[in-house]
Length: 370
Image (cartoon, rainbow, N blue to C red):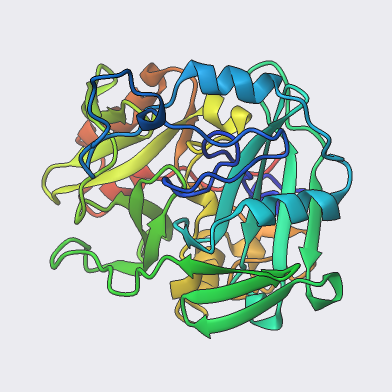
């Protein structure tokens, strides 16, 4: 498969937090290991107040991690129906789906191995009653992802999906119902004057890293940009980089940005390649396109302008009509060392690059495997 295309189902089945991640703070489901999720307040030493302010951070301890990893489990990890039933039973009655491709991520440990997975209410078929479910042994620096366990679930699997409103879907199974609240970003727009006259706003991107972007397309140069959305506080600390005076790198995410001072905006130019290998939350926003907000054929036409070889091969969401996968919009560098980002600064500072071409300094062209 072309490297410009990503797998139709795997996309990025990432992580969340201990025992069953994806469960909101305050709920304490019992895992298959028989261990309830703990918290710092429940174990506070005598004499210390447990009345923490609502805005206080959550404390995660190594004790809980060790007890989770070493706990016994009777779950049949190869039985997709059994794993689904367990994960679904552990969810609270209502969950919030933040990422804009509508993935609800979770993770758990089984026999000492971390598994990552997700539920997905895909824009293309959720109104047809389909809930996508997947899980796999998670990757790390020395091992790749394990076997993908995937299953699209419908009423024939005793799973119901009912639309309650545009951004609310009720999923039922085994006598339990869970309300999935999708991320309503319909009012999110770039600030006045933020976009150039030749740019089209395609929609808001809420990445699983909790970083928000505006996905835009430059019609004159036929390039995409992920522009950092700073209309809300950015959930990272952007640090200066020796790669260039205008280059900033997120302390938490590793996302690299070029600060276009004249336009007052930050353009995503790089992600750390190690995060791509690990397939974690920081592997880039390519897998969180603004599915709930795509206007007609705007995304498809932009992709075809960016990569003319795709003409006639895609639907309006960017899926290949052949069913092979979905087009990958990743106009940024996968860097191993921050010094590799210096090329962006050099291009921006090059006096031979005209003002009308400068935006092209910040987009990596589509490429294919030989």
